[in-house]
Image (cartoon, rainbow, N blue to C red; front, side):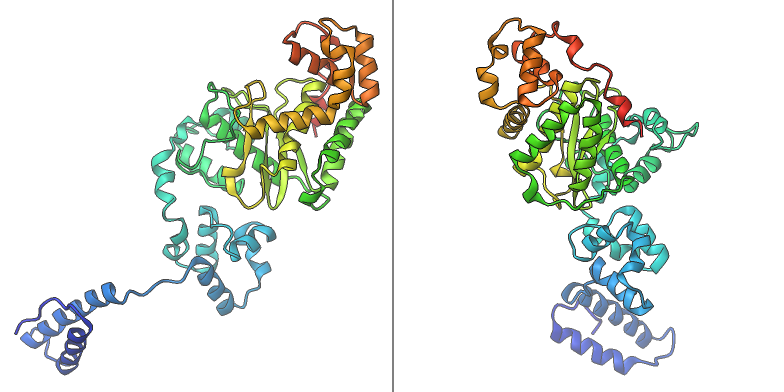
Length: 401
């Protein structure tokens, strides 16, 4: 009887027994052809009924480490840093394409094993993103992409490498281009994503002295930050040092063409980063934007280990669309000038307070006069008055380093 498809383990065992009896048959004989067909049928059945599950990426890495006598520290050159290595090996972070390539070349781990957990995301990377739509020239000018004549032709290669250098991956539209809730409809999504990745890359170059602890993020912390505004330009340098000692990076990454961004807050290697665009080079704008972004940390709106979906990027000119933004606004206003002090001051209700009144309230609140003038302009929607008190052009040059 000519073999037929194997349907259960019992049929498989009988086929294996017959194969044993046919071993050694002369090539080209009917027995040899039957042996070949039986082996194919048994193989097909085993693949379906008893598939061999490949090791997970982490299991494969551990096996390579044991067989090659490696320590966790030896993985840093493949995974980028000690913190990233710890996250990957604990299963809290997936491998990026750059890591997969490095492990494949360096440790000889099969690529098909390493991409298992990323498999669902990889097709979206190719289908969902038009890499030529990134602001390639502007990115090259900032040193994020190479300066080459055929930049557009190699857009995908360069942008992917840029994203991996930023310890991230460019996915399709479903998982990317979605920063926060306070966004301008005129923003170009590709430029926003480039700015977000650029902020991560620039933050990765900065060493932070202290260790971040969520419990330190209180309204009192915001008030301490706000009081440094009274120190004139020295206050900006002081707040950078204070935040660094608290494990918080404060960086300046100018916004890109076709964006209207003020800044954003995200986590990198377990510590928060506040990235400001400073598109308005004014003292009042700097302090409110900074305290607003820190307020998101106080509220726990952004936390470590949540990936890029937990990154807030905002345009503060836009009206707040949800409770997170309204509460961050409130915390920032109250930290800069207490509600009682603002409401009891003639500045708050006056249609045209005098510069002396503004300076007096600033001294009482312990903040820079620009903070008071900026709040009055915002609440009264009158942006013609008190321009001389705002510290125009006095912030960006302090971030030249």
